[in-house]
Image (cartoon, rainbow, N blue to C red):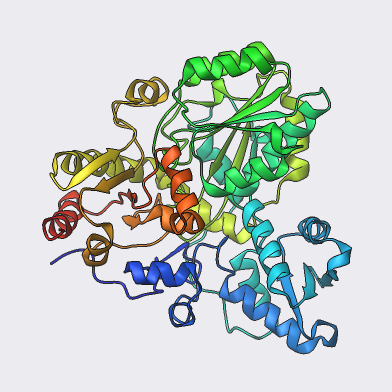
Length: 504
Protein backbone atom coordinates (compact mmCIF):
# COMPACT_ATOMS: atom_id res chain seq x y z
CA UNK A 1 0.00 0.00 0.00
CA UNK A 2 1.30 3.47 -0.91
CA UNK A 3 2.25 5.82 1.89
CA UNK A 4 0.58 8.55 -0.18
CA UNK A 5 -3.19 8.40 0.25
CA UNK A 6 -5.22 10.64 -2.07
CA UNK A 7 -5.71 14.14 -0.68
CA UNK A 8 -8.92 15.95 -1.70
CA UNK A 9 -8.91 19.49 -3.02
CA UNK A 10 -8.21 22.03 -0.28
CA UNK A 11 -7.08 19.57 2.41
CA UNK A 12 -4.46 21.12 4.66
CA UNK A 13 -0.95 19.71 4.36
CA UNK A 14 -0.27 18.78 7.17
CA UNK A 15 -3.58 18.25 8.99
CA UNK A 16 -3.33 21.41 11.07
CA UNK A 17 -5.20 24.73 10.88
CA UNK A 18 -1.75 26.34 10.69
CA UNK A 19 -0.58 24.24 7.72
CA UNK A 20 1.45 26.12 5.12
CA UNK A 21 0.26 24.02 2.17
CA UNK A 22 -3.01 22.70 0.81
CA UNK A 23 -3.89 20.02 -1.71
CA UNK A 24 -4.34 21.01 -5.38
CA UNK A 25 -4.68 17.54 -6.89
CA UNK A 26 -5.44 18.39 -10.55
CA UNK A 27 -4.47 21.05 -13.06
CA UNK A 28 -8.13 22.06 -13.15
CA UNK A 29 -7.83 22.77 -9.42
CA UNK A 30 -4.62 24.74 -9.96
CA UNK A 31 -6.27 26.91 -12.61
CA UNK A 32 -9.39 27.32 -10.50
CA UNK A 33 -7.26 28.40 -7.55
CA UNK A 34 -5.36 30.95 -9.63
CA UNK A 35 -8.51 32.29 -11.30
CA UNK A 36 -10.42 32.27 -7.97
CA UNK A 37 -13.13 30.08 -9.43
CA UNK A 38 -15.93 29.98 -6.80
CA UNK A 39 -16.31 26.22 -7.12
CA UNK A 40 -12.61 25.70 -6.44
CA UNK A 41 -12.36 28.31 -3.70
CA UNK A 42 -15.31 26.75 -1.91
CA UNK A 43 -12.91 23.91 -1.03
CA UNK A 44 -9.70 25.93 -0.63
CA UNK A 45 -10.29 27.63 2.70
CA UNK A 46 -6.61 27.87 3.58
CA UNK A 47 -3.26 27.93 1.80
CA UNK A 48 0.24 29.33 2.00
CA UNK A 49 -0.21 32.07 4.62
CA UNK A 50 1.17 34.95 2.56
CA UNK A 51 -1.10 34.12 -0.39
CA UNK A 52 -4.37 33.07 1.22
CA UNK A 53 -5.68 35.19 4.11
CA UNK A 54 -5.98 32.70 6.94
CA UNK A 55 -9.50 31.62 7.99
CA UNK A 56 -8.81 32.74 11.57
CA UNK A 57 -7.83 36.21 10.36
CA UNK A 58 -10.90 36.35 8.12
CA UNK A 59 -13.13 35.31 11.02
CA UNK A 60 -11.59 37.92 13.28
CA UNK A 61 -11.97 40.67 10.66
CA UNK A 62 -15.59 39.63 10.08
CA UNK A 63 -16.23 39.86 13.83
CA UNK A 64 -14.99 43.46 13.91
CA UNK A 65 -16.88 44.35 10.73
CA UNK A 66 -20.13 43.04 12.20
CA UNK A 67 -19.69 44.85 15.52
CA UNK A 68 -18.24 48.18 14.31
CA UNK A 69 -20.56 50.48 12.34
CA UNK A 70 -17.59 52.43 10.93
CA UNK A 71 -16.47 49.26 9.12
CA UNK A 72 -19.71 48.79 7.19
CA UNK A 73 -18.97 48.24 3.48
CA UNK A 74 -15.23 48.38 4.12
CA UNK A 75 -12.46 45.80 3.79
CA UNK A 76 -10.40 45.28 6.94
CA UNK A 77 -6.81 43.99 6.81
CA UNK A 78 -5.33 42.88 10.13
CA UNK A 79 -1.58 43.37 10.14
CA UNK A 80 1.36 41.97 12.04
CA UNK A 81 2.08 45.24 13.89
CA UNK A 82 1.12 48.94 14.15
CA UNK A 83 4.16 49.76 12.00
CA UNK A 84 2.94 47.42 9.26
CA UNK A 85 -0.50 49.03 9.39
CA UNK A 86 1.10 52.43 8.88
CA UNK A 87 3.17 51.09 5.99
CA UNK A 88 0.05 49.69 4.31
CA UNK A 89 -1.80 52.97 4.89
CA UNK A 90 1.02 54.91 3.26
CA UNK A 91 1.09 52.46 0.36
CA UNK A 92 -2.64 52.87 -0.33
CA UNK A 93 -2.54 56.62 0.24
CA UNK A 94 -5.03 58.81 2.08
CA UNK A 95 -6.80 59.60 -1.21
CA UNK A 96 -7.91 55.95 -1.30
CA UNK A 97 -10.14 56.49 1.71
CA UNK A 98 -8.13 53.99 3.73
CA UNK A 99 -8.01 54.54 7.48
CA UNK A 100 -6.05 52.99 10.34
CA UNK A 101 -7.76 50.42 12.55
CA UNK A 102 -6.79 49.74 16.15
CA UNK A 103 -8.57 47.66 18.76
CA UNK A 104 -6.87 46.59 21.98
CA UNK A 105 -3.55 45.18 20.74
CA UNK A 106 -4.71 44.57 17.16
CA UNK A 107 -3.91 46.84 14.25
CA UNK A 108 -4.82 47.07 10.62
CA UNK A 109 -6.22 49.16 7.80
CA UNK A 110 -9.80 49.51 6.56
CA UNK A 111 -10.58 50.79 3.08
CA UNK A 112 -13.70 51.17 0.94
CA UNK A 113 -14.82 48.03 -0.84
CA UNK A 114 -12.90 48.04 -4.11
CA UNK A 115 -11.37 45.30 -6.23
CA UNK A 116 -8.43 47.53 -7.09
CA UNK A 117 -7.72 48.52 -3.47
CA UNK A 118 -8.13 44.91 -2.34
CA UNK A 119 -5.54 43.72 -4.86
CA UNK A 120 -3.08 46.49 -3.97
CA UNK A 121 -3.36 45.87 -0.24
CA UNK A 122 -3.12 42.08 -0.48
CA UNK A 123 -0.12 42.20 -2.82
CA UNK A 124 1.70 44.65 -0.55
CA UNK A 125 1.18 42.50 2.54
CA UNK A 126 2.08 39.35 0.60
CA UNK A 127 5.29 40.81 -0.80
CA UNK A 128 6.74 41.95 2.50
CA UNK A 129 5.07 39.60 4.99
CA UNK A 130 2.61 41.85 6.79
CA UNK A 131 -0.36 39.62 7.60
CA UNK A 132 -1.44 38.85 11.15
CA UNK A 133 -0.09 35.49 12.30
CA UNK A 134 -2.63 32.65 12.16
CA UNK A 135 -1.76 31.73 15.74
CA UNK A 136 -2.21 35.30 16.93
CA UNK A 137 -5.58 35.46 15.16
CA UNK A 138 -6.51 32.14 16.77
CA UNK A 139 -5.56 33.41 20.24
CA UNK A 140 -7.63 36.56 19.67
CA UNK A 141 -10.65 34.48 18.68
CA UNK A 142 -10.29 32.38 21.84
CA UNK A 143 -10.02 35.54 23.99
CA UNK A 144 -13.28 36.78 22.51
CA UNK A 145 -15.10 33.50 22.99
CA UNK A 146 -15.32 32.88 19.23
CA UNK A 147 -13.23 29.71 19.48
CA UNK A 148 -13.28 27.24 22.34
CA UNK A 149 -9.52 26.68 22.53
CA UNK A 150 -6.35 26.91 20.45
CA UNK A 151 -5.38 23.95 18.28
CA UNK A 152 -3.51 21.39 20.39
CA UNK A 153 0.12 21.06 19.27
CA UNK A 154 3.55 20.46 20.74
CA UNK A 155 5.36 23.68 21.66
CA UNK A 156 8.61 24.55 23.40
CA UNK A 157 7.92 25.55 26.99
CA UNK A 158 10.98 27.67 27.72
CA UNK A 159 12.69 30.58 25.96
CA UNK A 160 11.64 29.74 22.40
CA UNK A 161 13.65 32.49 20.72
CA UNK A 162 16.70 31.43 22.70
CA UNK A 163 16.23 27.80 21.69
CA UNK A 164 15.87 28.69 18.01
CA UNK A 165 19.05 30.78 18.16
CA UNK A 166 20.88 28.04 20.09
CA UNK A 167 20.21 25.54 17.31
CA UNK A 168 21.02 28.06 14.58
CA UNK A 169 24.42 28.75 16.15
CA UNK A 170 25.33 25.10 15.42
CA UNK A 171 25.58 26.08 11.76
CA UNK A 172 26.31 29.79 12.23
CA UNK A 173 29.07 29.71 14.88
CA UNK A 174 30.51 33.11 13.90
CA UNK A 175 27.22 34.92 14.62
CA UNK A 176 26.21 36.11 18.07
CA UNK A 177 22.60 36.15 19.23
CA UNK A 178 22.43 39.83 18.31
CA UNK A 179 23.26 38.89 14.70
CA UNK A 180 20.45 36.30 14.45
CA UNK A 181 17.37 38.40 13.73
CA UNK A 182 14.12 36.42 13.79
CA UNK A 183 11.26 37.58 11.58
CA UNK A 184 7.62 36.65 11.15
CA UNK A 185 8.39 35.10 7.73
CA UNK A 186 11.21 34.70 5.24
CA UNK A 187 9.96 37.43 2.93
CA UNK A 188 9.92 39.95 5.76
CA UNK A 189 13.52 39.04 6.58
CA UNK A 190 14.41 39.66 2.92
CA UNK A 191 12.48 42.93 2.85
CA UNK A 192 14.06 44.19 6.09
CA UNK A 193 17.61 43.29 5.06
CA UNK A 194 17.15 44.77 1.59
CA UNK A 195 15.69 48.02 2.93
CA UNK A 196 18.52 48.25 5.48
CA UNK A 197 21.24 47.75 2.88
CA UNK A 198 19.53 49.90 0.24
CA UNK A 199 19.05 52.81 2.65
CA UNK A 200 22.64 52.67 3.86
CA UNK A 201 24.03 52.49 0.33
CA UNK A 202 21.73 55.18 -1.09
CA UNK A 203 23.28 57.67 1.35
CA UNK A 204 26.58 56.93 -0.43
CA UNK A 205 25.11 57.51 -3.88
CA UNK A 206 24.78 53.79 -4.58
CA UNK A 207 21.32 52.75 -5.80
CA UNK A 208 21.87 49.97 -8.38
CA UNK A 209 20.84 46.42 -7.41
CA UNK A 210 21.64 43.22 -9.26
CA UNK A 211 19.30 40.22 -9.23
CA UNK A 212 21.20 37.05 -10.15
CA UNK A 213 18.97 34.69 -12.10
CA UNK A 214 15.25 34.09 -11.80
CA UNK A 215 14.33 34.26 -8.12
CA UNK A 216 11.23 33.60 -6.06
CA UNK A 217 8.42 35.92 -7.16
CA UNK A 218 8.14 38.04 -4.00
CA UNK A 219 11.90 38.56 -3.88
CA UNK A 220 11.71 39.82 -7.46
CA UNK A 221 8.81 42.09 -6.43
CA UNK A 222 10.80 43.58 -3.54
CA UNK A 223 13.80 44.30 -5.75
CA UNK A 224 11.61 45.87 -8.45
CA UNK A 225 9.33 47.89 -6.19
CA UNK A 226 11.74 49.19 -3.58
CA UNK A 227 14.73 50.24 -5.67
CA UNK A 228 14.90 54.01 -6.22
CA UNK A 229 13.99 53.90 -9.91
CA UNK A 230 13.23 51.24 -12.50
CA UNK A 231 16.72 51.75 -13.92
CA UNK A 232 18.23 50.77 -10.56
CA UNK A 233 16.92 47.20 -10.89
CA UNK A 234 19.20 45.03 -13.04
CA UNK A 235 18.17 41.47 -13.87
CA UNK A 236 21.16 39.27 -14.70
CA UNK A 237 19.51 36.38 -16.54
CA UNK A 238 22.40 33.96 -16.17
CA UNK A 239 23.69 33.73 -12.58
CA UNK A 240 26.60 31.58 -13.81
CA UNK A 241 27.94 34.24 -16.21
CA UNK A 242 30.97 35.33 -14.18
CA UNK A 243 32.42 37.42 -17.00
CA UNK A 244 29.13 39.20 -17.64
CA UNK A 245 28.71 40.01 -13.95
CA UNK A 246 32.30 41.26 -13.79
CA UNK A 247 31.64 43.55 -16.78
CA UNK A 248 28.64 45.07 -15.00
CA UNK A 249 30.84 45.80 -11.98
CA UNK A 250 33.58 47.24 -14.16
CA UNK A 251 31.10 49.59 -15.83
CA UNK A 252 28.85 50.52 -12.89
CA UNK A 253 30.84 49.56 -9.77
CA UNK A 254 30.57 52.94 -8.08
CA UNK A 255 26.78 52.90 -8.41
CA UNK A 256 26.15 49.30 -7.36
CA UNK A 257 24.54 49.11 -3.95
CA UNK A 258 24.33 45.37 -3.78
CA UNK A 259 23.63 41.96 -5.24
CA UNK A 260 20.88 39.52 -4.29
CA UNK A 261 21.36 35.82 -5.02
CA UNK A 262 19.60 32.61 -4.06
CA UNK A 263 21.69 29.54 -3.35
CA UNK A 264 20.57 27.74 -5.41
CA UNK A 265 18.03 29.67 -7.48
CA UNK A 266 14.32 28.88 -7.42
CA UNK A 267 13.22 27.03 -9.56
CA UNK A 268 16.18 26.23 -11.85
CA UNK A 269 18.42 25.33 -8.88
CA UNK A 270 21.58 26.97 -10.21
CA UNK A 271 24.38 28.09 -7.90
CA UNK A 272 26.60 31.07 -8.81
CA UNK A 273 30.28 31.20 -7.94
CA UNK A 274 29.82 32.67 -4.47
CA UNK A 275 33.47 33.34 -3.69
CA UNK A 276 33.98 35.22 -6.96
CA UNK A 277 30.77 37.17 -6.38
CA UNK A 278 31.82 38.09 -2.84
CA UNK A 279 35.20 39.25 -4.14
CA UNK A 280 33.57 41.56 -6.68
CA UNK A 281 31.24 43.02 -4.07
CA UNK A 282 33.99 43.63 -1.55
CA UNK A 283 36.33 45.25 -4.09
CA UNK A 284 33.60 47.60 -5.29
CA UNK A 285 31.92 48.40 -1.95
CA UNK A 286 28.66 46.57 -2.74
CA UNK A 287 26.63 44.57 -0.26
CA UNK A 288 25.98 40.88 -0.90
CA UNK A 289 22.67 39.41 0.29
CA UNK A 290 22.40 35.62 0.03
CA UNK A 291 19.34 33.43 0.47
CA UNK A 292 20.01 29.68 0.97
CA UNK A 293 16.34 28.76 1.58
CA UNK A 294 16.11 26.34 -1.38
CA UNK A 295 18.81 24.12 0.08
CA UNK A 296 18.78 25.24 3.77
CA UNK A 297 21.29 27.31 5.66
CA UNK A 298 22.06 24.06 7.52
CA UNK A 299 23.61 22.76 4.29
CA UNK A 300 25.63 25.74 3.10
CA UNK A 301 28.57 27.69 4.51
CA UNK A 302 27.68 31.14 3.17
CA UNK A 303 27.76 33.70 5.98
CA UNK A 304 31.50 34.31 5.53
CA UNK A 305 30.81 35.44 1.95
CA UNK A 306 27.81 37.67 2.64
CA UNK A 307 26.99 40.92 4.34
CA UNK A 308 23.60 39.49 5.25
CA UNK A 309 22.19 35.98 4.91
CA UNK A 310 18.40 35.79 4.74
CA UNK A 311 16.37 32.62 4.96
CA UNK A 312 12.92 31.20 5.37
CA UNK A 313 12.76 29.13 8.53
CA UNK A 314 9.49 27.69 7.25
CA UNK A 315 11.64 25.48 5.03
CA UNK A 316 13.35 22.45 6.62
CA UNK A 317 13.63 23.89 10.17
CA UNK A 318 9.82 23.89 10.57
CA UNK A 319 9.73 20.51 8.91
CA UNK A 320 6.19 19.62 9.98
CA UNK A 321 4.99 22.36 7.62
CA UNK A 322 2.92 24.37 10.09
CA UNK A 323 4.98 27.48 10.90
CA UNK A 324 6.07 30.49 8.90
CA UNK A 325 9.15 32.31 10.19
CA UNK A 326 12.24 33.96 8.79
CA UNK A 327 15.79 34.91 9.64
CA UNK A 328 18.25 37.65 8.76
CA UNK A 329 21.85 36.99 9.83
CA UNK A 330 24.30 39.88 9.95
CA UNK A 331 27.91 38.96 9.21
CA UNK A 332 29.67 40.58 12.20
CA UNK A 333 32.97 40.68 10.30
CA UNK A 334 31.76 43.01 7.54
CA UNK A 335 32.51 46.76 7.82
CA UNK A 336 28.85 47.83 7.86
CA UNK A 337 27.72 45.16 10.31
CA UNK A 338 26.62 47.45 13.14
CA UNK A 339 24.62 49.79 10.91
CA UNK A 340 23.07 46.93 8.92
CA UNK A 341 22.06 45.28 12.18
CA UNK A 342 20.46 48.48 13.50
CA UNK A 343 18.59 49.20 10.27
CA UNK A 344 17.41 45.62 9.78
CA UNK A 345 16.01 45.45 13.31
CA UNK A 346 14.14 48.70 12.63
CA UNK A 347 12.47 47.19 9.54
CA UNK A 348 11.82 43.66 10.80
CA UNK A 349 8.44 42.27 11.84
CA UNK A 350 9.11 40.11 14.92
CA UNK A 351 7.89 36.54 14.97
CA UNK A 352 4.79 35.91 17.09
CA UNK A 353 5.78 34.13 20.34
CA UNK A 354 3.51 31.12 19.77
CA UNK A 355 4.93 30.65 16.28
CA UNK A 356 8.42 30.68 17.78
CA UNK A 357 7.34 28.17 20.42
CA UNK A 358 6.14 25.81 17.69
CA UNK A 359 9.30 26.35 15.63
CA UNK A 360 11.50 25.74 18.68
CA UNK A 361 9.78 22.38 19.19
CA UNK A 362 10.86 21.28 15.69
CA UNK A 363 14.14 22.98 14.83
CA UNK A 364 16.30 20.61 16.86
CA UNK A 365 15.42 17.80 14.44
CA UNK A 366 16.64 19.70 11.37
CA UNK A 367 19.87 17.77 10.78
CA UNK A 368 18.22 14.35 11.10
CA UNK A 369 15.32 15.39 8.85
CA UNK A 370 17.74 16.75 6.25
CA UNK A 371 19.79 13.55 6.30
CA UNK A 372 16.73 11.55 5.24
CA UNK A 373 15.73 14.15 2.67
CA UNK A 374 19.22 14.18 1.14
CA UNK A 375 19.27 10.39 0.76
CA UNK A 376 15.88 10.48 -0.96
CA UNK A 377 16.78 13.40 -3.21
CA UNK A 378 19.83 11.71 -4.69
CA UNK A 379 17.86 8.58 -5.49
CA UNK A 380 14.86 10.40 -6.94
CA UNK A 381 17.06 12.68 -9.06
CA UNK A 382 18.92 9.65 -10.46
CA UNK A 383 15.62 7.96 -11.31
CA UNK A 384 14.27 11.02 -13.12
CA UNK A 385 17.54 11.60 -14.99
CA UNK A 386 17.38 8.07 -16.39
CA UNK A 387 13.69 8.03 -17.33
CA UNK A 388 13.03 8.33 -21.05
CA UNK A 389 9.89 10.43 -20.56
CA UNK A 390 11.72 13.10 -18.53
CA UNK A 391 13.45 15.81 -20.54
CA UNK A 392 15.37 17.98 -18.05
CA UNK A 393 16.19 17.50 -14.38
CA UNK A 394 17.55 20.32 -12.23
CA UNK A 395 18.90 19.90 -8.70
CA UNK A 396 21.78 21.10 -6.58
CA UNK A 397 24.25 18.68 -8.18
CA UNK A 398 23.25 19.33 -11.79
CA UNK A 399 26.52 19.44 -13.81
CA UNK A 400 26.03 23.07 -14.89
CA UNK A 401 26.79 24.42 -11.40
CA UNK A 402 27.70 21.35 -9.35
CA UNK A 403 31.20 22.57 -8.52
CA UNK A 404 29.93 26.00 -7.43
CA UNK A 405 27.48 24.29 -5.09
CA UNK A 406 30.02 21.85 -3.67
CA UNK A 407 32.42 24.67 -2.81
CA UNK A 408 29.90 26.05 -0.31
CA UNK A 409 28.21 22.80 0.77
CA UNK A 410 28.84 21.63 4.31
CA UNK A 411 28.94 17.99 3.13
CA UNK A 412 29.06 16.25 -0.29
CA UNK A 413 25.47 15.01 0.00
CA UNK A 414 23.99 18.17 1.57
CA UNK A 415 21.73 19.01 -1.36
CA UNK A 416 18.39 20.00 0.11
CA UNK A 417 15.27 18.34 -1.24
CA UNK A 418 14.33 20.35 -4.32
CA UNK A 419 14.25 18.86 -7.82
CA UNK A 420 12.69 20.62 -10.81
CA UNK A 421 11.99 18.71 -14.00
CA UNK A 422 10.20 18.86 -17.34
CA UNK A 423 8.60 16.11 -19.36
CA UNK A 424 8.82 15.00 -22.97
CA UNK A 425 5.06 14.49 -23.00
CA UNK A 426 2.14 16.59 -21.71
CA UNK A 427 2.39 17.81 -18.13
CA UNK A 428 -1.31 17.99 -17.16
CA UNK A 429 -2.26 14.27 -17.42
CA UNK A 430 0.94 13.32 -15.59
CA UNK A 431 0.18 15.77 -12.80
CA UNK A 432 -3.45 14.68 -12.53
CA UNK A 433 -2.66 10.97 -12.15
CA UNK A 434 0.43 11.38 -9.95
CA UNK A 435 -0.15 9.96 -6.48
CA UNK A 436 1.99 12.36 -4.46
CA UNK A 437 0.89 15.27 -2.24
CA UNK A 438 0.44 18.31 -4.48
CA UNK A 439 0.58 21.86 -3.21
CA UNK A 440 2.74 24.94 -2.65
CA UNK A 441 5.79 25.23 -0.37
CA UNK A 442 8.72 22.85 0.18
CA UNK A 443 11.17 21.76 2.84
CA UNK A 444 8.75 19.55 4.78
CA UNK A 445 8.83 15.95 5.97
CA UNK A 446 6.02 15.55 3.44
CA UNK A 447 7.01 15.22 -0.21
CA UNK A 448 5.35 17.99 -2.24
CA UNK A 449 5.10 18.62 -5.96
CA UNK A 450 3.54 21.52 -7.83
CA UNK A 451 3.39 23.04 -11.32
CA UNK A 452 5.52 25.88 -10.04
CA UNK A 453 5.17 28.41 -12.83
CA UNK A 454 1.36 28.13 -12.71
CA UNK A 455 1.31 28.83 -8.97
CA UNK A 456 3.98 31.52 -8.93
CA UNK A 457 3.51 33.21 -12.32
CA UNK A 458 0.04 32.41 -13.63
CA UNK A 459 -0.04 35.78 -15.38
CA UNK A 460 2.99 34.71 -17.42
CA UNK A 461 2.02 31.13 -18.32
CA UNK A 462 -1.35 32.27 -19.70
CA UNK A 463 -0.18 34.91 -22.19
CA UNK A 464 2.06 34.79 -25.26
CA UNK A 465 4.14 37.70 -23.96
CA UNK A 466 4.52 35.99 -20.61
CA UNK A 467 5.61 32.70 -22.14
CA UNK A 468 8.18 34.61 -24.22
CA UNK A 469 9.46 36.26 -21.04
CA UNK A 470 9.82 32.86 -19.35
CA UNK A 471 11.51 31.41 -22.41
CA UNK A 472 14.10 34.21 -22.37
CA UNK A 473 15.02 33.04 -18.87
CA UNK A 474 15.08 29.36 -19.92
CA UNK A 475 11.92 28.60 -17.95
CA UNK A 476 9.40 26.07 -19.25
CA UNK A 477 5.82 26.97 -18.22
CA UNK A 478 5.21 23.26 -17.56
CA UNK A 479 8.18 22.86 -15.20
CA UNK A 480 7.33 20.76 -12.16
CA UNK A 481 8.92 21.47 -8.79
CA UNK A 482 9.32 18.49 -6.48
CA UNK A 483 10.68 18.57 -2.96
CA UNK A 484 11.47 15.21 -1.44
CA UNK A 485 10.26 14.50 2.06
CA UNK A 486 11.23 11.80 4.54
CA UNK A 487 8.95 9.03 3.25
CA UNK A 488 10.65 5.91 1.81
CA UNK A 489 12.42 6.76 -1.45
CA UNK A 490 10.92 3.62 -2.99
CA UNK A 491 7.43 5.04 -2.53
CA UNK A 492 8.31 8.42 -4.03
CA UNK A 493 9.93 6.75 -7.04
CA UNK A 494 7.06 4.27 -7.45
CA UNK A 495 4.52 7.10 -7.57
CA UNK A 496 6.56 8.99 -10.16
CA UNK A 497 7.15 5.84 -12.24
CA UNK A 498 3.46 4.96 -12.29
CA UNK A 499 2.45 8.40 -13.59
CA UNK A 500 5.35 8.61 -16.06
CA UNK A 501 4.75 5.18 -17.53
CA UNK A 502 1.13 6.10 -18.27
CA UNK A 503 1.99 9.48 -19.75
CA UNK A 504 1.72 10.09 -23.49
